Image (cartoon, rainbow, N blue to C red):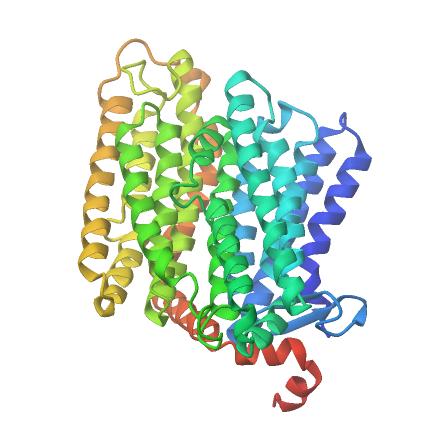
Amino acid sequence: MSHLTIAPLLLPLLAGVLILLLGERRLAAQRALSLAAVALSIPLALLLLSRAAQGEIAVYALGNWPAPFGIVLVADRLSAFMLTITALLSAFALAHAVRGDDRFGPHFHVLFQLQLFGLNGAFLTGDLFNLFVFFEVLLLASYGLVLHGGGRARTRAGLHYVVINLIGSTLFLFAVGALYGVLGTLNMADLAVKIATLPEAHTGVVRAAGLLLLVVFAIKAALLPLHMWLPGAYAGTSAGVAALFAIMTKVGAYSILRVYTLIFGADAVAGVQWLAEPWLLPLALATLALGVGGALASRALREQIAYLVLASAGTLLVGFGLFSVEGISAGLYYLAHSTFAAAALFLLADRIVLGRGAMADRYEAGPPLPHPRLIGGVFFALAVLIAGLPPLAGFFGKLALLQAALASPALVWIWAVVLIGGLLTVIALARSGSLLFYRAHGVPQAQANNPLGDELSRLAPIFGLLALGLLLVVEGEAVLNYTRATAEQLLVPAPYIEAVLHPVATQEARP
């Protein structure tokens, strides 16, 4: 049993404890330790990714208690993929935050590390109750990060965020309690085995619990009509936090994919088989349409980006809602692209806010930005990236999604919503660029106070995220091959179940 599987949990947890012991006054030491921990998480995630790419399903039994009696962590292709995205995203989000965002309130770096602890735990856990526990850890940390820096707008948005997610947590407990009462286990692999032979008398309770879980995960993924918390929370918080939060809706999407392929998938009994299929695709299409509409109606750049996050969540869940190899593969590719693109836009919006002074990011004609060609060029590249235009990754993600939809009865709806949504996204971003860059007037901030070298260093995290988007194009075939293999692994859960419940036999069978 390799200890590498638990390392992505131990690293942020220990870093958070050490940062807390440093005290609030030693900000430079906190920054150094936090950056070091995030930097170290990248090779750890890549090592797990390389092992998962070879087909290995690594199972770590805490306390050496075997499943289903003990707690297990499981690193398969999907878990490793999500860990890698989180590690890369957090590095650039933190690199931006240490330029000043972390000064606006206490314990920023502790909360940041605990957020990563919760995220990594949610991706690795093989137990439904511990998925709830890690949800609560990442939500508690995110409450503090949303409110970081204070202010009326953040407090109001944070209150909505807290209340809605507390409701979700309560429903999660109800669902978990119902499943445990009927099946006597919460290990996901064991749940899959028992639901495959579920007596008809218990089907109603299990179905109700499964639908409750779908509501919970829909809240986390911001699916319509449970999306209300997202625009205000994302638009109102600091840039580094908003960039990290680009992965938050993907936790809900990950949970839907994991639970409704493993537990309520093809091997479940009639009545709970493919339980999410009738609901997920229409809700995802509606969420995509709502997100694009919100982006068109937005009055400020950060608000628009928050709605684009909503639209991207709808887009990738359209792929997941097909419950096919091609659909899931396209959704996972789009998940990676949209996470990096949205995070980069949030960081760029912060630079625009600083450059426009009192006008902030409102869609009103204001003073020119310093180095407008540079910042405008970056905005254009990111707009092309998130809108899904060629030759960047968003185009290939949507193309793969449209190809996957060819076998779906909802082909016409999927093509119409995705293509029209893409066109309207281009129009919304063109309006934003025109108001922010072409209709500027007045006296710009003196460029002598903003030399090009300083400006480039401020934009470095954005360039890093943009480079990741370009890497998804350059290595597009390899990434799509990986996501396709991930989809195949998810839709045939027997090896996962065998690895968790019979690890010794699995190791002996491995060459």
